[in-house]
Each structure stands twice: as structure tokens, then as C-alpha cells.
Amino acid sequence: MTSFRTPMLGIRKRIDYRCLFTFGESCFNYYGCYVTLCVYKVTIKIKITSMSLTASHRIESVQDPIIPIVGQWISENPGTVSLGQGIVWYGPPAQIEQGIAEFNQNPDNHVYKAVHGIPQLLSVIERKLELDNQIKPAGNRKVVVTAGGNLAFSNAVFAIADPGDEFILSVPFYFNHEMAISMANCKSVLVATDENYQLDLRAIEASVGPKTKAVVTVSPGNPTGVVLSTESLIAVNKLCKRMGIFHIHDEAYEYFHYGDSEQFSPASVEGSEPHTISLYSLSKSFGFASWRIGYMLIPNALFHAILKIQDTQLICAPVISQFAAVAAMRAGRKWCYQQQETIRESRSIVVSALDEITDICTYPKSMGAFYFYLKINTEISSIDVCERLIKEYGVAVIPGVTFGSSDGTYLRIAYGAMTPESAGQAIQRFVSGITAIVKD
Ligand SMILES: Cc1ncc(COP(=O)(O)O)c(C=O)c1O
Image (cartoon, rainbow, N blue to C red; front, side):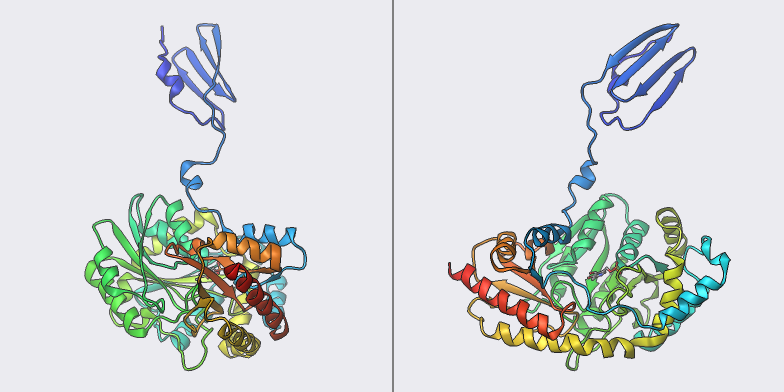
């Protein structure tokens, strides 16, 4: 007679599916909150009491995305103006209509396409990488089109890391990077930046250990808008090469520069091919946030792994969006620069207003993206300040705690979605609100 030992019943606390195990003539039927044991026609039904129909500990430990939380506060306070979300005021170029028409001409476009992207888009991207980023993808690198830059980052994490591996992030970090790392059961090793949010190369090098898989950099940065110096990016890239680890570089804001500032792509450094992963997005540059198109440039050696991951998670980026992306990218960076005139104006308005309250907040006048990251002269937590700004003053910003800042109160201001008029109104509300809160 088959014997069942009670530990078998205790093997799972989480019961969210049905399983049937058979043992010779006996069976073990495990369903819902009961376990039924059938042993030679004798049925025993046991109620399971230690149930846990909850999310995994892994996901529970990931920070909650802040944008929906702030969004909820905004919806509870109608009339709030937002300096919160990192989006642009414009949508895609009109040329995408041609791309969509082309998509519609062929019924075959409604089926799955290649995991790494449609050939037309891959060739437009390769040309763009050569012209705008001085990167020659041909040879020992591959382009993979993804459903946005965030997915490109998690593809990279899954492709290179095992549970417990480490990624070096400079603080303040882009929150979805930190979240993706923890979702993969890996660890973010946090390194401070200097007072201008430039990289601390010594601290990065000192943080590399046996479990380090990659150093992550973002330029222009979110939440700071800071353009990392070319020298520091070259140094990180060379450090990664020397240490045998990857350099993941996020260029989501590559076209957003002010003054003399220019984009530099570490993947253009000679010898960077085997260890550099570069991430791009159309969300900001081409007003494509809801179309979900980004891409990654990866070493050949990772291609197979990335295809495996993307085939499982996504299959392929939405094909209609890929057709639209071909048309948008043909409009080129000049088109993006034209849209950004408005953002430049909003930026000046925001800077002038913040210049009036240097006793309340300080920040480097960063030259990229469409963010400023303010250090606020208060003991009140960044979350509480944000909540009060929305509820009492009708203006939304994002709290610094979300970006890993723990040495004071920081707030991110985003001005990309503003017209100059709305930027003026929003920043005036911010200035009045933060002054009152700090001087309270
Ligand atoms: C640095 C950075 N990378 C990636 C993304 C995500 O972009 P996507 O919409 O392409 O997923 C963002 C969005 O805010 C970002 O700030």
C-alpha cells in the first residue's frame, strides 16, 4: 500500500492551481483549499488552512510604481496641474500615416513577425545608429526591436544575470531599472553621485565584486536631466571591459539637449562591442509613448538569449507600431528638434521661477532630457511634500525617494509635457506651495 507522509501536504503553501499526482493505484488530488487523498477507494478530504493567495515575495519586495500613486492623488484633486510625468507634449510625426497605410495594405501583416523586428525598421535603425550615434552595428552586434526601452532593459537583465547577481546603479536612479533588477531576483548596488549628479568613478570601481554583472548608466538622466560627461562614460566603458562585466547604457533622451550639450554613445568607443548594451526609445523623441517601440543594440553573443526571452515575453513588438516607427524615424532627429522648441521655452520659464527660491531648493541646471532634480531645504519627507503639493496647492511632482535618494528631500520636476503657458502656471503653483510648506 502506498503511504502518504504528511510533509507531502505541506510542500506548497500557495494554492492557486490544480494538480494531480498519481502514486500506483493511489492518487493525490490537490485543488482549491482541499486536498483529497484517494487510497484504494478510501477518500480522505483534508482542509488546508495555511493558504496564501498572494503575490510572490519577490514581487512584493519591488517598490510600487510611483506614477499611478501620484495619478491617484491627482484624480482625487481635480484641477491639479502636473509637473510629474516624464512625457512630451507632442504626438508622433504626421508621416506615420504612410507607415500605417503600408501596414494595412498587406493582410500578412496581421500575423506574428520576426522576434527581433521587421527588416525595414532594423535597417532604418542601423542607419540612424551610424549617423546619429557613430555606431556601426554590422559585424559583431545586433539590433533588437522591443516594446519600449523598459522592456529592452529587462531583456538585458534576464539575458546576463542569474538570481543574486548585482548591478551597479548610480543614485538617483531611474526607478524602473531598479525595479526590473529586483524582479529578476538580482541586487542593485547603489553608488552616490557628486553634487552635480555626475558619476563617481572611484565609487563605481570599488563597488565591482564577484557578483557584479553590469554597470548601468543613463544619459541624459532621469530624474536629473544631467548629461554625463563623455570622459566618465568612456571610463565606465573601459572599466567594464577590464573587469569583464557589461556596460548597460540607456539613451532614451538622446535627442534632448540644451545649449552646447551633445549626445555621446559609449557603444561608439572602439573595442566596446563585446560588453556594451545600448538602449533606445521612441517614446519621448517621437511622441511614441503609447506605441511602445524601443530597441537595443547588443553584442552578438547575447542575441540568442535575448530572442529566447523576447519570444516568451512579447513574441514581437506590435507590428503596426513598427511600421509607424519606420516612417517616424525617417522624419529624423530634425523633426524632434522642431517639437522641442516648446520644451526649451518651458525650460526657461521653469528656470526663471526656480531662481527666485534658491533658499528653498537647489539643483544643477541640467542640460538634457526635460527634468530638474531639486534638493529641498526641509526635514519633511519627499512623499509628504508631494502629497501636500497636490492636495493643498494643486501641483504634482515626483518624490525623490522613488529614485533612491535617501540623504534628504528631493523632488523631480518634469517640464516636457508643458506648453509655455501651462509651465508658467504650474511652476508658479509649485513655487508658492513649496515656499509655504518649507517655511511652515
Ligand atoms: C531613462 C529611461 N529609460 C527608459 C524609459 C522607458 O521608455 P519606454 O516608454 O520606451 O519604455 C524611460 C521612461 O521614462 C526613461 O526615463
